[in-house]
Length: 384
Image (cartoon, rainbow, N blue to C red; front, side, top):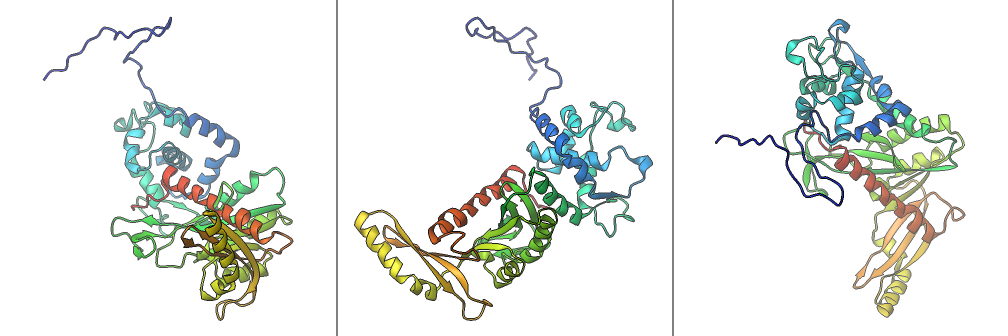
């Protein structure tokens, strides 16, 4: 069936005194104009230049059309604009707006060296793939993947960006730790089934301070949620204290991070902690009086009731010393809901209710940061 084309202008009803026009001769247009705002931010903080500096390029300089900085910028802007797959760049490589964001002088690609590349100012998915999969040990001799990332330099860059976001050192900062699932749908290396998440997945570790990402470490799911946390804290706290020696640092996490190794490291290195504590029979007996008070109050009012107990506690074997524990005795209609927190903070720092409700529960905001990573920036797209 032949397409019926009508060259005359479409006609629409006017809007008051305004004429409504619909045309199809707009030429090269884009829906990604918001990327220009990201470009302005990068001009101020120099993120892409510094991130590109974390790569070593072993390619022949005379054969390079796309600098490492261009490749990094293309991939980062693509992710930020909602293009998570490398295959997307087989079409995006034609995009003049993305070429502008990357910093290309030839926005249409008409001056490319090879005739088959002309009209494409940016790199194709195959070139970006070589950037992402380069292995440092073999990059210098690899035929194709000759660009290698320095992971330690990228770790340091995340903390540097956090430090530079403050005009002067803060009096106190909180470091929030959490693990999450990164579901897998194939036979990827390091694939394990996780009972809590009920799927095959990786188990990445995240560390945030407010809105700032300080650590994103990919791990296999056969590890404890807290695995590697002490090493990451030692690195991050050391880097922070080199710049802010007087700033007080407190870590916060759920029960998956309530491990003696973490608490002992914090106590040795003058780092505070507020950690969820898994309940057991001994803890529940210690909270028995308060739970009964909460139950009676709940039955009397028909609404949730809670009260708190502040006491000293030590496990029979796993803890190296006695520590301060806060018990939340809460009764919901028809349901008991006791919870516990262990902390190094003193009663002068916070009483039991303030410590639980305002300090510990604030860790829930970190879950929004993880959602932003996974839903907004596709951090769980580890298909390769």
